[in-house]
Length: 191
Image 1 (spheres, one colour):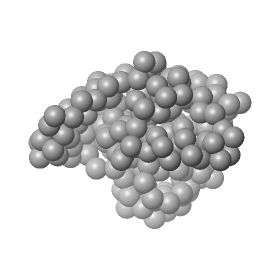
Image 2: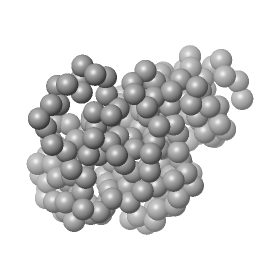
Image 3: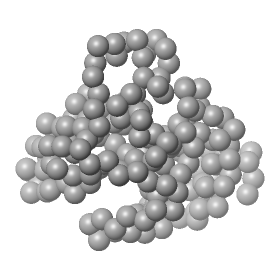
Image 4: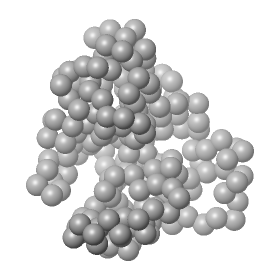
């Protein structure tokens, strides 16, 4: 499971799992923003499975306000967040073997300090909020960095093969080749 966000989607996940006779084995988190982590605790502890997150964003599981604008952070006042019982920190280059897939962790700072993408068998990239179809993730929130995002795009995205499928954190699926051709944030970076 990847980025179980908000609102609490744990009941919908339970229904889907029951309907299709599935059992989650892990939750992969691309970054610590609430729209990607809100349901990590109930899902992971409900199924007794680990959450994988980059070391830099782990603190955001318990303290999501640290990566939010002051206005939005104030709206969380009184809410208590917890991390699951089993949290496993990832670093760039770590390899996970899950469900017969080789999943590589790719540290991709810019959207948050601990943004991470997952490359599945070098064929599919789960880009979180780093790369979207036609756009990129914002960099103006706390722990975001335009400079880090530019470095990530140059060093982690542009070298990937054109045929690699990209599953972003929001919006439609795309490919690296398509984004290299049409994404205004990539077109000017060169190769």
